[in-house]
Image (cartoon, rainbow over all chains, first blue to last red; front, side, top):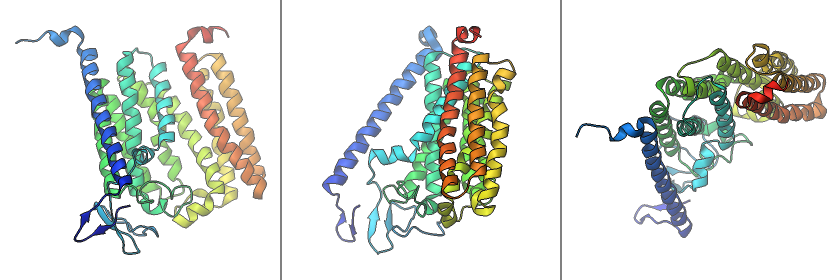
Length: 55
Length: 323
């Protein structure tokens, strides 16, 4: 738990920096998984028709 | 929102910086990844996913395996969203109950505002993706399930009536219908039967827990049946709902949807459930508490076995042809 001092701003401890890093990695993995999911979803829903569009 | 009774340790606000009662200001954004996972109630999620899988698998329509997987993922995330929103709203009463006081919000690991944002994001995302991946009937049902759990159960019924978990139990009963709708685009009679099994299973399951946690609920001011009507009346109602549940569990076989093998499994399970409910009704004191714990533990097994039997029965036709 971070103490907040009015003049110092927020100073994270090493433990809090580790947690922030872990949250960032988890968020990145979730976003990557969503991108893959939307790609696969599109291919499955449209099939070969995904390439069949007017240019 | 404002919390009327604040936890002893933490003055809860929805801002990213909050002040503890001892005057120390603390900030949000310090949670572990595991705190956010805990916020989604993973144990409840696992039951939701399993019952939704059964609804999806026994539905009389085939769904592409990838779309089926994404649909289940959406249902799981939707359930997680409902759990997060429940913990956001209930932080004040969670803080005074032994069973829930270590949850991330009352412990101060996640601020209420963070839980609210997390829950809303997951709720909107899961409904939207389910609509795109499967169909909008399933998405609508999932949205209604989240709404029912968060608004009807958590915000309204839970603190207002001893029938809270009876009516609110509908939220936990919807997942097989959502799974069924994801596969078929509609609602079938069997999916309603699966809904009813969970609906009538919920009161004996939760009241068995409430029998030995009554003090907790009383401290939190939640009008659970043992607190409002007493232990004897709760035991009577547990038996009543178990009497209704036993034949209902076998209903998929009685209505011709499932094989006799399923009927036997559900029949035996229902009979054991009934026996344990009779034991709860007849005992008191420490023996009564032990009987309630046995019923609670078996009720979890009962639901799992009945739905697993229906899953095997529905996906392996030769299983049914044996009888």
